[in-house]
Length: 337
Image (tube, rainbow, N blue to C red):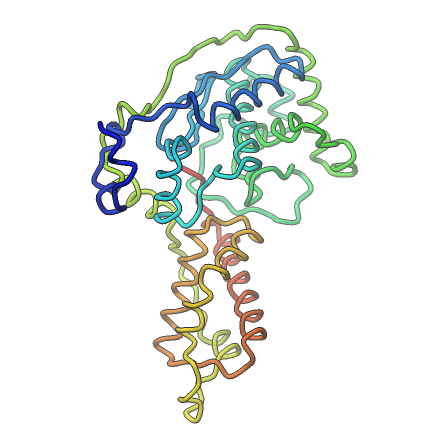
């Protein structure tokens, strides 16, 4: 494939099959980040180096001692497309990317050494064989879990709890004993610290370097890929906003000359979405679905802006946050792809 794909419009690029993208990790920022991960493992006494490959999304296959990295991180043009399609680039920022890689390395090490078969693992994290949910209902106030990735991801499943705990343990200068003092999660960190001491300098039992879902096997077009991804992050929980919307905006007949609530929310859409996504940990696309519902209801109710813009914006952030948390607490926070 020629290099012309790098200057294609989004519409043209979306017709490209993922398997036809000439991508690699070598020579990109990803290569440097992987090397930093290996350095962190080495400095922690861990001999195993999880192998990595490009695929559709972040994931660590069962029984494989390595992990996949999403293809879009291998080229700036594809990162722009990802943002246009999904409103954010998961792993695009250096700090976030390292957090995710440490998390995936935790899964890979578990596969390499079989930690989940130990009684101590089951007692602290729960049964690894527990069915994996399509969504989960996190408790933001819980002290039983560490905080690494957004949306209290450790609460999704025992396997994610272990991977998140490992990621916090591995993070340089994390000062986890001080940070989690008094938390039940500290017991999990101490257990991971004990496990890593046991395998220091020890080669893994499982050295399987299999790759699952590499780009060469993904025949989907980018358009098909993003249709599926947006469907995964769509919000299905029915939220009803009318009473709260009327507390923010006006429905009085005499206010017909004022700016519409629809135009206000559309103008501030990106800013509102980013602020709430960062605060709740929900995917930007999921927050945008909630915001879209608010805009649709404002249009039906013919609401208008009758208060100063800064006050209106603050109320809109509070409402969007509350409705987003309602979606999350209702058990419809999707597991990442």
